[in-house]
Amino acid sequence: MTGILGKFQVEYNVHGARVMARSQQLTGDCTEGGEIDAIILMLKDDLDACAKEMKRLVKVNRSGSLFEGWPTEV
Image 1 (spheres, rainbow, N blue to C red):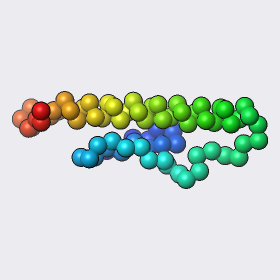
Image 2: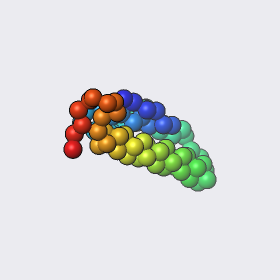
Image 3: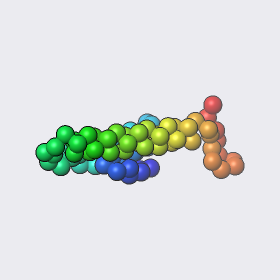
Image 4: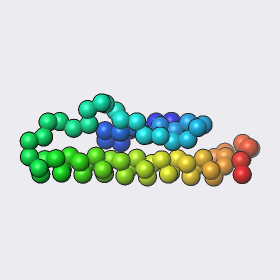
Protein backbone atom coordinates (compact mmCIF):
# COMPACT_ATOMS: atom_id res chain seq x y z
CA MET A 1 0.00 0.00 0.00
CA THR A 2 1.37 3.40 -0.94
CA GLY A 3 0.25 6.98 -0.41
CA ILE A 4 1.83 10.07 -1.88
CA LEU A 5 1.96 13.20 0.26
CA GLY A 6 3.73 16.16 -1.32
CA LYS A 7 7.41 15.36 -1.87
CA PHE A 8 7.26 12.18 0.18
CA GLN A 9 5.68 8.78 -0.24
CA VAL A 10 4.35 6.59 2.55
CA GLU A 11 4.68 2.87 1.94
CA TYR A 12 3.15 0.15 4.05
CA ASN A 13 3.69 -3.60 3.91
CA VAL A 14 3.90 -6.55 6.29
CA HIS A 15 7.07 -5.09 7.82
CA GLY A 16 5.43 -1.76 8.75
CA ALA A 17 5.22 1.81 7.47
CA ARG A 18 8.04 3.90 6.02
CA VAL A 19 8.57 7.26 4.33
CA MET A 20 10.45 7.54 1.06
CA ALA A 21 11.53 10.74 -0.70
CA ARG A 22 9.94 10.95 -4.14
CA SER A 23 13.09 12.49 -5.62
CA GLN A 24 16.66 13.13 -4.58
CA GLN A 25 16.17 16.90 -4.83
CA LEU A 26 13.59 18.15 -2.35
CA THR A 27 13.95 21.89 -2.98
CA GLY A 28 14.77 24.22 -5.81
CA ASP A 29 17.56 26.80 -5.72
CA CYS A 30 16.93 29.33 -2.95
CA THR A 31 18.34 32.86 -2.92
CA GLU A 32 16.47 34.45 -0.01
CA GLY A 33 16.04 33.54 3.65
CA GLY A 34 12.25 33.79 3.43
CA GLU A 35 12.25 31.41 0.46
CA ILE A 36 14.26 28.88 2.45
CA ASP A 37 11.93 29.16 5.43
CA ALA A 38 8.83 28.68 3.25
CA ILE A 39 10.22 25.62 1.47
CA ILE A 40 11.41 23.98 4.69
CA LEU A 41 8.03 24.67 6.31
CA MET A 42 6.29 22.92 3.40
CA LEU A 43 8.62 19.92 3.79
CA LYS A 44 7.88 19.81 7.53
CA ASP A 45 4.14 19.93 6.81
CA ASP A 46 4.53 17.06 4.33
CA LEU A 47 6.48 15.02 6.90
CA ASP A 48 3.81 15.70 9.53
CA ALA A 49 1.19 14.42 7.07
CA CYS A 50 3.36 11.35 6.45
CA ALA A 51 3.57 10.69 10.20
CA LYS A 52 -0.21 10.95 10.48
CA GLU A 53 -0.70 8.50 7.61
CA MET A 54 1.89 6.08 9.00
CA LYS A 55 0.19 6.10 12.41
CA ARG A 56 -3.19 5.53 10.76
CA LEU A 57 -1.87 2.53 8.80
CA VAL A 58 -0.23 1.01 11.88
CA LYS A 59 -3.46 1.48 13.86
CA VAL A 60 -5.51 -0.21 11.11
CA ASN A 61 -3.05 -3.10 11.07
CA ARG A 62 -3.26 -3.53 14.86
CA SER A 63 -7.05 -3.41 14.92
CA GLY A 64 -7.34 -6.85 13.34
CA SER A 65 -9.23 -8.02 10.31
CA LEU A 66 -11.34 -5.64 8.28
CA PHE A 67 -13.72 -8.36 7.11
CA GLU A 68 -15.74 -10.90 9.05
CA GLY A 69 -14.18 -14.34 8.95
CA TRP A 70 -10.61 -13.15 8.46
CA PRO A 71 -8.19 -14.07 11.24
CA THR A 72 -7.23 -11.37 13.74
CA GLU A 73 -3.93 -11.01 15.51
CA VAL A 74 -3.78 -9.88 19.12
